[in-house]
Length: 147
Length: 145
Image 1 (cartoon, rainbow over the protein chains, first blue to last red):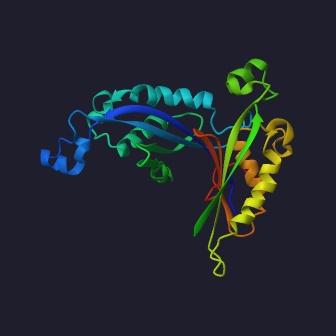
Image 2: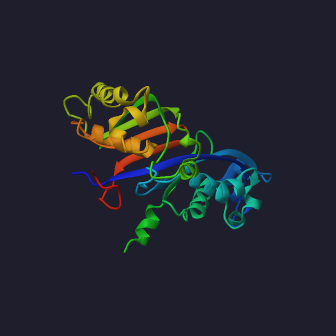
Image 3: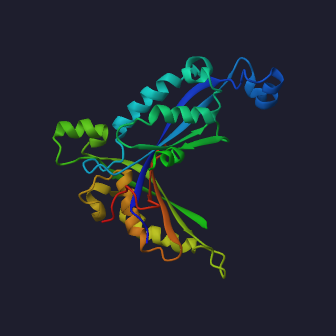
């Protein structure tokens, strides 16, 4: 016997940004070994594609989990505007303290979006290139929040 | 467990309008999707069935059978139709991709007799899709009609 139906909505957004993988906690030699060409001191860039998945009950008046008229401007304000055409290491505060690997970018985007008031942000997936994708889901957070 | 996914593309028209709202509210809530003449999409449906392969055939289910079910239940109902006017299962519902996914789930669930319906994904465009699945523990989901 299956449980209640669960609906989620996934929306794709794009931004282009540069980053450099380098940690001052490591020696130059270790940085080179760990990050290879991603550690080039001038940085390099990607056309990032992000997938934002939200879930929750359907709004009876709109038939929607989330209205794109609300989700799009929220993501635009919280993520696209501050990240697009930027150097993440220098221009996004969070990455002055943490290395802007796409794993960390996923977590930072989740942190910025989790307060979306209309639905629960369940998953952030980033395609850094067409060959690499990274995913952060709120499962761990949900377990911590559970009584 | 193995998950098997079959894809179906269908093209349909729709628009968003709630008769409870004023014209002004409809425009504010639904934006340009409120255009009463409707607009269309090439929808892509992905249906995933989960189960163990049959030891005799090595298959969870015969994909040809699934293809025929999708053709009968979905393509014949929705392909080249206006979802607001021509699909009885969507009558009284706003044909968002969430509602389309939920309606397709209801249409398919009992028709899949080998394996179990696991996920219905409806792409409205490459940048937007809805998933209908079941809550693992029956928590906070849409209650079954």
